[in-house]
Image 1 (cartoon, one colour):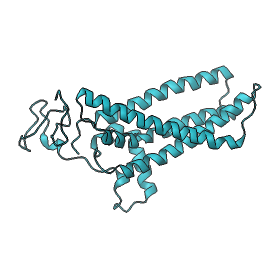
Image 2 (cartoon, rainbow, N blue to C red):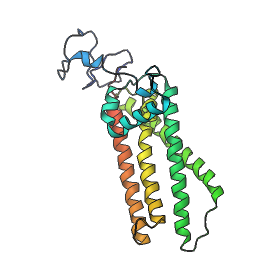
Image 3 (tube, one colour):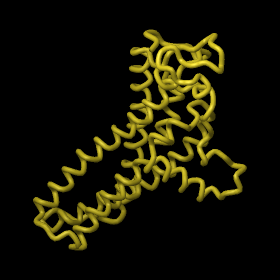
Image 4 (cartoon, rainbow, N blue to C red):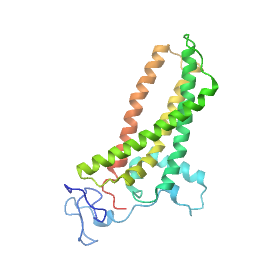
Length: 233
């Protein structure tokens, strides 16, 4: 693996990061033996960006989201790392909107649960600021993580420029959906008494979810970065 930051024009082995400049296309990587052809072919645009497939935007959105959520390694190993950020950002915004709506609704319902114990009940008009706050927090966290990742990658000698990281983070946004959905179902289920347990047990469940979901989001983020740090396209 290269100990310095490779240039964008360098051809890297997508398995180990070895610089393959000048080697015959039909050969193998001198470092790990992987065929060089595997590092120059195989990456395609995500289905979401393939406008000429005849599928509707909704279908392409759902299928791409399913691929990212259930097969993140395969998705980021085969998707293009360079390209127009606009469609990836649009994909992310849809997921951010859904996640923010679920988080805001869950927070509002949770507040109503707490109201049973003597705290003033929330008003419906608070849903809007809760939604804006959740959306803004997701947006800020995404861009902060992208900046820090690109900075650390450059420091460590990995070729992960900011546009590549940001594009990956936009598609990683699909992982916000299962997190927000499970939080909403947990809080909603307790409010409807479908989860029969004391309030302390309910709060313990929420606390465990916070830790578990943080680990889940980091693990899927790392899967994305690991499969793109040597990408050539």
